[in-house]
Figure 1 (cartoon, chains in turn blue, green, orange):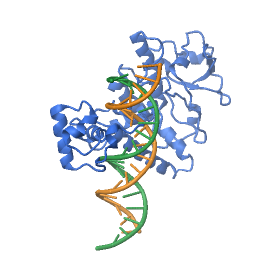
Figure 2 (cartoon, protein in one colour):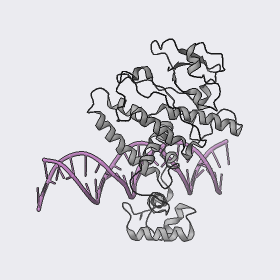
Figure 3 (tube, chains in turn orange, green, yellow):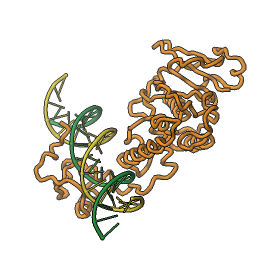
Figure 4 (tube, chains in turn green, blue, brown):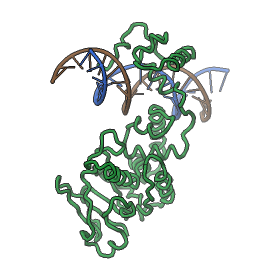
Length: 304
DNA sequence: AATCCGTCCAACCGCTCTTTT
DNA sequence: GAAAAGAGCGGTTGGACGGAT
C-alpha cells in the first residue's frame, strides 16, 4: 500500500544523489523521456526506485527549473494563492513557472516559522492572529469568487466549480470587520499598510493567473480587531446569493456602494464584508441574505 | 578553534487518486 | 466492478551549512 513495487527492491539506494547518478538520469530522460517511472531506474542504470527518480527529476534536474530566492512578486503570489487554495502546493507551483511544489512548501514552512516568531514579540496579537492577518487577503478571495463567476458564465457551465480548478468549492472566504480596523494601527502585524495591500491587488489583477484584467477593489479594509479572530466562512460559490438592485434597504449606502448586482463588475463589491453568523451588532448598514437552497444566512455589512 | 543552535532544503514516507488489467 | 499498479501530493525528517557563543 503506497509503497511502489520498485521500492521493495533490495538494492535501492537512498539519500542524496551523487553527480554521477544525476548525470545518468539526465542522460536517460533527455534521450528516452521518462514514460513509466518504475522502469527508469533499471533502464538508466540506477540503484534507485522510480519514485525517487521522478522526485529528483521534477524537483532538481529538469531543465526549466528555476532556482534561487523567491522574488517579491512570487512571494506575494504564493501568499495570496495559499489564502485561496491552502496547502495545495502543487497547485500553487503550477502558477509559478520553474518553481516546484517542494520548493514552495519549504519556503512557506520557513516563512511561517519566521512569522510566528516575529509575532510572538508583539503582545497585541497572538501568533495565530498575526499569521491570519498577514496571510489572508479578503480582497483577493473575493476576486477569486468573482472570477469564478465570470469563468462559469463564460464557459456556460452550471455554477459548480470544476474539481482541480483554482477556485475550489471548498475555498474558504471570510471577511473582517473593517470598522474595527480604524482603532488599529494603519499597518497590520506584518508591517503591510493598506496602500501596500492595494498595490498587491493591483499587481495580482494584472497577473496571468487571474485571467481577466479586472480593476482592483481598493477600499476593502483589511485590518481587524487584534483581540478577535473571526470564524472562517465557507463562502463556496453555491452559497453566494446574487442580489438584484432594489433588494437592499440601506439608504445612502446604496448610492456609495453598489450592491452585488453584476458579478462582471468587481467595483460592485467594494466595501462589502461578509460573515456566516452574526457577531454582535453590525450597525445600520447590515443586511442579511439567505441561500434559498441551504437556508444558510450570510450577513453583509457595507463600509461607508 | 570548538561547540551549539537555528535554518534551509533535498529526499523519504505514507496516503490518495487515477489508470490499467 | 474489483484489484493491482502507477503517479502524484503533502507532511515530515534529517543532514548540511552558517552564524553565534
